[in-house]
Length: 314
Image (cartoon, rainbow, N blue to C red; front, side, top):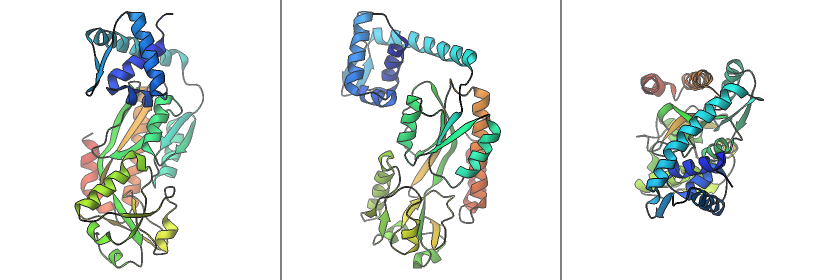
């Protein structure tokens, strides 16, 4: 048996992730399968590549040497394949649920020859789909302090370093008359659970509510956007992205002090989009989001004051 490209990618994934469990998630395989693969590689190279302990998977001297050479080889291989093969089939573009999705798709049709769109409320799901090659590029939203675990073959550019999370509540609610809502004033409300809860949004909601003295009562779990009828009927409130314009019977308001914030990131597989294409798509993502922000009566003042400075700083 000889070393294969998949062996090099697995070793690099472990080195980048710092643990076998995170690397297995990125590669889309089980941890036992990755452990077995690593043991085979170690037998082939004649030595231990990682020390595993509480600190995670730390490269040995042999492991560090292999990582350095493997990374160089994979970069050259990815560039070689991209240059020769060209792109086969449409670009599969993923996005978290945003109000600007329709406008973004129209822009992508202009920027790319052929594109399909997948909307997924889970940023973790989108990141995994990127790692596994099921999608080629994506707009992902993460908690401002959160981290994206992506393989080396995936490029990243920050669309917006942070934007506040807003609240959707019934238009008839007394708090809807305010220009912004104190989170503590929502202590008695029934909540629609945030979409993509495994991404950390539910944890962030609970932490923010706990900081002001209450535990949110999550009564409803449903796909992104499906809670509007409940909100309009006066049955619930829900966190929403700030460009949301609500709908009939639904008011969207800022939360005072921005207790929850998210970061928008554009990611792409380098073998599917070259740098020039990625830059064009990035510009369209930013353009679509900015246009939606300016079209939102509630979010526009915030965006006009901070948006240009934040995006130009990227």
